[in-house]
Image 1 (spheres, rainbow, N blue to C red):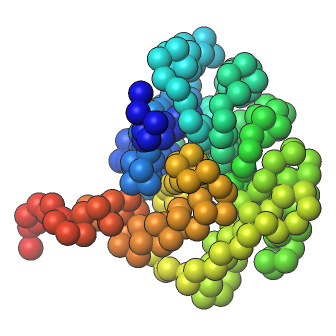
Image 2: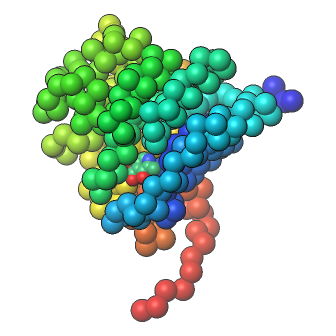
Length: 276
Ligand code: PLP
């Protein structure tokens, strides 16, 4: 194996058949950020941007078989965990993490779709906590951050940072505090550990109707960049600046989704004829 190979990144998450969120967004984000994407499915969703029609959750043994298929064949550089469809699946993921100890574990504690459909079983809170205890980074939005702490949603950036500090202390990890759901024309993000803010980035807010999959994509991008670059602040800056472009040029195919490959395709974008 070459000393300089592409980082391998495994997404453990639920599906989105229109490719804007979930595991499909993760794979695009991993590829766009320079990684080799792999995927273990925790739930099959029949959904689009308007809502969720049905959810099919595999038995824990099938999830375990997917995880061991990857582990037996590939050196895993980073893992990103998104939606996990049932309490017993959280237990299976926690056991696997404890056994395998992947070098980088990023958890996006997904609780609902942008259309408001719940994605976290109420019985899964303890299992999610056990997974967080084995993770390096958690990437909640402000609502998820508050729910994890059992507190009201922060309405100011300093309050959000303080919640991030408490969550980091509770689980022994770093929290990416995201200001995307605050008001104002800036959208700050910060890495916060139990001691306080490690690094903060600040980008102009981009108004778009196509922000679906932003959380999934950012957490996958950071996992990939961290595996490639070797440090968290550099990974945040690279991932966030990539996301800015992906948001700016969202809806590449007329579907409400990020443009994961804007930078790659900007030279020679493939197009299809559209009716007038
Ligand atoms: N995972 C799945 C399977 C989803 O369907 C969604 C949203 O629809 C998410 C995660 C969270 O998406 P977002 O990145 O918009 O928070």
